[in-house]
Image (tube, rainbow, N blue to C red; front, side, top):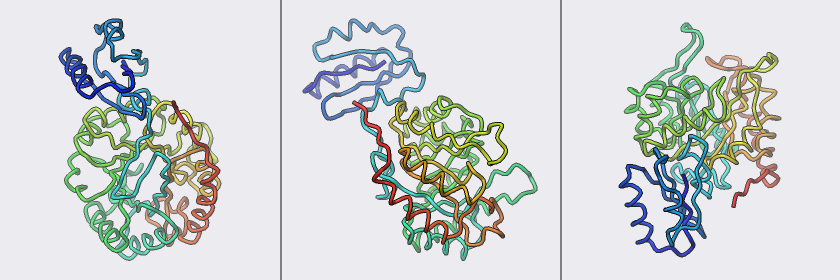
Length: 338
């Protein structure tokens, strides 16, 4: 349920209404825009008398929300969320490219790639330390040592780092990681999401291989319900009957999500396509479609990469893609909500 207050409602009146609503065991979320203040009611609102609330002098309108996700719902938030990662902003008109190797392999490798992608305009460095792999015999990442190498690259370049977590027990190891990524395979690892909700750290949540948009938003809701509202959504392709690409990149998710939620949405064309020559056109398409950012895999020697070499760009190829992306930004689709 959403309660829209009249303009110029005093803060004392807002607090009194908030206290009264919470006395009914209903959590509240207040969003203050330029003209209106909106109070979102989270919990069992079936017993709440809408007419009673509507009759209050300070209330302009009351409406029930059908979608089960409340905190992630745009109806609770008129303005787009801007996630600030140490001064690097994503969302609300702020566009960023996250780039780096699928897996951290060595200090020389990750530091060299970090320097290259920064020169090309990337705002954040990605790198896998823990790698969920389909085969138990594949390279699983350097784990804790990989995180240390990422921090060395951050120290040399100043780029905030993004890395994937697989287990809630590993959270202490990610204390210095700027953005914690939840991969596609863990999108519905609800116990992990609950623990990440206790942090005040940006979480990059990837859509699962066979999950709907609503399921993605409900996973975001798990994190936000714990108190952590710094969630970035990532469309990385879904599994369909098509075999010519690794996955099918669902670019329609961008406008759909922009309508449903205030959370930033970035696109990962590398994992979606699976082939490096397809990354550039899909990165360009995602940019024009209105994505808030891109996540692109870059490796100094893709042919010898320990993980996902076929979809990785060389630093030179990434530089070309980045130049094209920044040229397209003025023509990107925008989504304005009243």
